[in-house]
Length: 325
Ligand code: BDR
Ligand code: CA
Image 1 (cartoon, protein in one colour):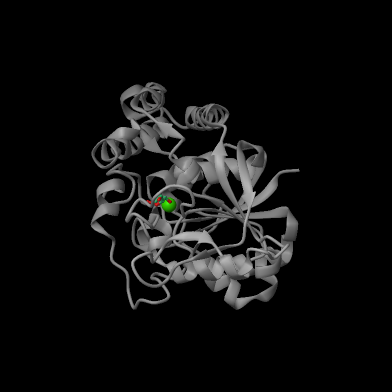
Image 2 (cartoon, protein in one colour):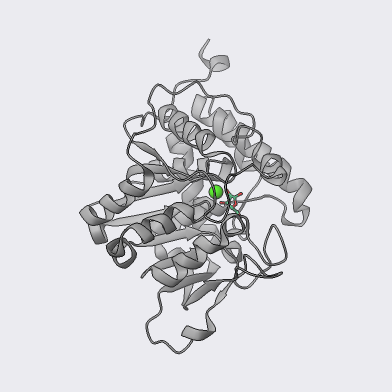
């Protein structure tokens, strides 16, 4: 039986790839997407998720909106660096038709809490943006905190951050929320920069998507090329773009893709290290470890699975206009 999954996305380019990967994974049944702010405004992210679901023939999957800013702020504006990496529309300037489906009236927090109530251990939640929505669900329901299985993309334990020497982009948006998540949730797997920067995609792979001659292939290639180009400027030493969010989905499919260490985590919320994710010294000797941090990844196995699944998914979409006419 497929494992149920909810993605909490700030749909951005690698979030879009993570969404496609979940749709293309037979081990997973995507029961809903919750939208958060981060790479884009929450409205833009929700719209991107709806449009991508429609592109891949899954407009039946509901999308819910979460809070639109961090818990310690009054509002949110997209950071310049986010717009540079993901484009102003979040999907690298790729144009998708206005989706027919609309965002659900129910809030993302209610949907998360109810889903954990209903499905318990059969459900995994994969947040790939700021922790704001998940923290709100934890505060709303003690049972959610106890029972939810969370595989998050965010943080950095053994390597520096990507927005400051300390902070990774998702955690940086709302460090208090990630700290609450680490302190109160019972089961958190952290897929941070330690491993996501070991899973890279290049123009050689996006060329294959473009050559499919389908709308899905064109979209994946166009958005990802934009993302690779941004990485060429911000992190030329890597030689490709980081598959941050898709790796979290990969681990939800198959935890043996990464090596985990069991450790109680915290997030610094004060001073120059604000946004740093690190072991909590006050719970170092606690025999119960609530977090599991990925420190190594089987890159080849992950990339092979990711590429073949996205290619199969994109292949099944309509021919692109240039090929169809
Ligand atoms: C994370 O930040 C966002 O820009 C990406 O979508 C990813 O979730 C990487 O630090
Ligand atoms: Ca993201």
